[in-house]
Every structure is written in C-alpha cells, then in structure tokens.
Amino acid sequence: MRSFDIVEYGAPLQSVDRPTPVPEGTEVLLRTLATGVCHSDLHLWDGFYELGGGKRFMLGERGLKPPITLGHEIAGEVVACGPDAAGAKAGDRRVIFPWIGCGTCAVCQRGDEHLCNRPRALGINRPGGFADHVLVPHPRYLLELDGLAPEQAAPYACSGLTAFSALRKVGEAVYRAQPILVLGAGGLGLMCVALLKALGGHGAVVADIDPRKREAALAGGALGAVDAAAPDAVKQAQAAAKAPIGAAIDFVGAGQTARLGIDAIARGGKYVIVGLFGGDITLSLPLLPLRAIAIEGSFVGSLGEFQALMGLVKQGKVPPVPLEPRPLAGAEAALRDLKAGQIVGRAILKP
Image (cartoon, rainbow, N blue to C red; front, side, top):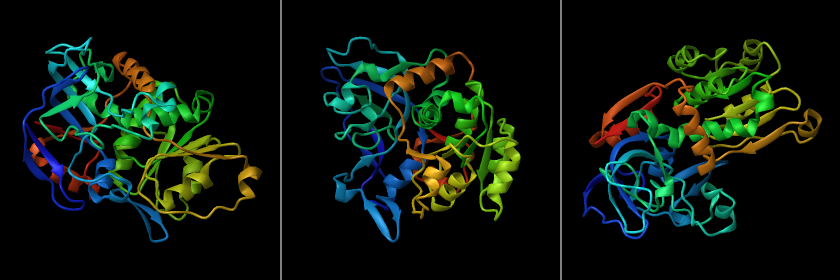
C-alpha cells in the first residue's frame, strides 16, 4: 500500500510504500475511496498548537511522534475482514468514525471515546486516510453510505460531526428560537450553516475575513455575513442577526474571533470554541456572571452523535457543502492550499 506521511514535523510529506496490512481479530481493512483534508491536519503537520504568549503545545513532547499518516475524514470499501469482524464483508462501502478510544475506560464506556485519554484516533494515533488503504479496529466504527457518494460522506466524520456536536452544546431551545453567530466560513462553518438549516434553526450570521467565503456562506443560507476583521464587526453581526444572538460557535479559535464571539452574544448566551488556530484573550471576570454567559470547548463528537448525524444526512435534509476533489498524490499541495486559505469548502483526496 502507499501512503503520504509526516516523517518529520514541518517537513514535506513523503510517499511511503509498505505491505498492505492483513486484518486480525475484529479488524477491517478498507480501500480508501475519499479522504477530507482538515485544518487539524495542518496543526499535526506543524507539530504544535499555538497557546498564546509565546507558548506552544508541542505534540512530540506529548508522545505523538512521526511517522504519521494523516486523514481522519475517510470513506472506503471493505476488502478484507478479521475472523471476528462480524457485521462487515468485502464490498461494503462505509464512512468511518475515526475518533476511537481505548474502549475500556470509564470515558469510553459512557460513549465518549473521542475524549479518551488513551486515543487510537485514525489519522493521528493510527494510520489514516492519506493512503490507499486503512485498517479499522472494529466494524462498529463503520457506517453505511446508503447511496451517498464517498466524497460527500467523508467530511461528515469530522467537519459534519464537529459542527453537529457544537450545535448540540448550544441546544435546540436556543438555536431554534434565536440567531447564532458562526465564526469562520471554511469547511466547518459552511457545514454548520447547512446543519442548522436541516435542524430547523432560526439561522446564522457568519463572520470571516475572506469575501469569497462570506459569499459561500450567504449562498448556503446564512442570515448575513460580516468581515470578522472590521472594527465594528460586533455591531455588524448584531445588526445582521436582527435579534439577540443566542450563541456563538467559533470554528477558528483565534484571539480575535474569541473576542468577537464573546462580545457579540446576548446576556445568557453561550460561546462554544471549536477551532485550534491559537492565541489567548483577557477576560473581565465580573462580566461573566453579570452577563450570565457560558464558555465551553467542543472537540469533534461521539459515535452516537455521528450515527444521529448520518441519519439526518440520509434523510436528505442536509444541503451539500462545496467539495474540491484532489488526487491522493496531491495531499501536500492540498494542505498548503488550505493553509493559504485557498480552499472554499472541503478538499477531498481520491486515490
């Protein structure tokens, strides 16, 4: 099999040929059909997260060392199964839940494998979809496509799931009755706008510095789109919402977007931070209780949430987001274009 791997943080990806794995036990081997390229892949490629104040979270110091085969948004076709892989057979086309935990700890047992302290996530801790084959530890992580094209289904494993889980944290009572602010109109932000429509939400105002992405958000049904870098971005967002903003979901996670989101929400609102761009902010603590606002982090989502999301998708209720197919051999070019802000929607690698 061939993969395109990080062999050194910050260095070019390398094409690697190795024996195709033979599944054992409950393992399932799939031929990769489509893999989304995510902003998280950029941080993994760099090898760190910016914490602000000149500090960095270094992945190598936390035990995550190359080689790493990126790619956690994966759809594929089953080619072989281990002897105990009940429920999967050759020829099945599946989208993969990649946020796999140890399976035995209290966190995993309550259904939150994505928060496990001993993760086995595909594309991070185990080889992912920047390859022509991928090995999955158990069939329970494989969801049927049910007629969905692989390139359409793959991004739901991260961008769709992450947006869906963030909306759940906002809560149906809020997003149905009040407008929300979506910070960032990349693949995640556009997915959030689409899911909000599918869930019967009041609507979203989107903030982004790129006019092309603001146009894409409006085309996707956003209530309004504002320049996140504008000096009066808070007032513009509140005016576009035409009602008190019940929550902000930050898919960028920079100091500037955090400030915008926290300042724009109404009293009693919630700021949910998803993005990992980096930085820090200073908060006036008395204003938190006086405004009764909540700040919550959100990391991808659970297997149960993924199953619920795919049920919604298969009902045809989720409008598609823009996709840009790329060859697998162009994985590094896709990463560089994503880093430069040149991709609207989602780049999809196809072997």
